[in-house]
Length: 377
Image (cartoon, rainbow, N blue to C red; front, side, top):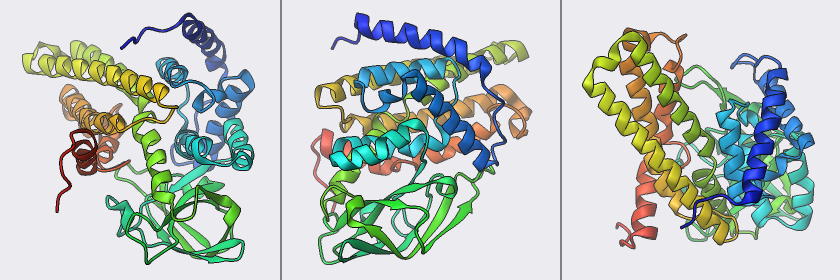
């Protein structure tokens, strides 16, 4: 497999790097982590800058390799993270680009790229987390509308979102995976209640969402009725295959910073710690190569990442936890100080073996779809 860049790709990298060097010093200070309206404004302001400079298209109008270069360079430059734009740019947007009608792409994609609209994810439910296909939120057809009732949990950025990528059960008599439909839900529709949830780290980027006879136009359905599970697999392939790319680059930067801190505070003299950091360095280098392989595979298959994303997600989730466990070893007693670098990151890393599909789910996918092992009974 050829992982080298073309002259066009290298020119894109150089141009992007120069642009980031010019604009990043001009950005305002980041708002407080608890100020979600402020964070939305900041994140969407950055997205508008990318749009005006001609870089917003990389999320679905460029090749997977160009997208990889963009994510790598913006992370290396410590550019703002997608933040409140995460679901729109990395989940819903790519799904609509791949599965939506021409009218749907025209309606939603430019608004996401300009930073005009924020999306949230309405997949998990209190009784359907890892077993997502067990969802119970119902949608009955009433003319040109669906009437939706139920609840969702862990709904990312719901309190500041304009739209929600929503999974509903449209045929309760169908087999478990066959009666599901993917809808775009307007978050200002009557009958929606949002209750923010605080995480272990004290942030509130998740929420419970309650839906009481909410009317959603049939025109907001992406894909066919009852074909939502297949569309969802497209969404999850983006989530597991490319959405964490920037975070791998960030983890490699953290690893370098940890080594520098260990040299400064004397813990570098501990052979066990040096071996641990060295192994993690090899691990993240391998994950970066796996990312490149997944991107190359996606490029060859029309732009949608394949099941290799589950291999990446499985190993990355555990490697990230191991990285911040190593950070605690480097920091010593300071690892209990919430105001110190890396401490909140360590708390948030605990969720990675659950988010975007638990590690147990990823192992099943790898076993069945890659290794060809039989399903469990």
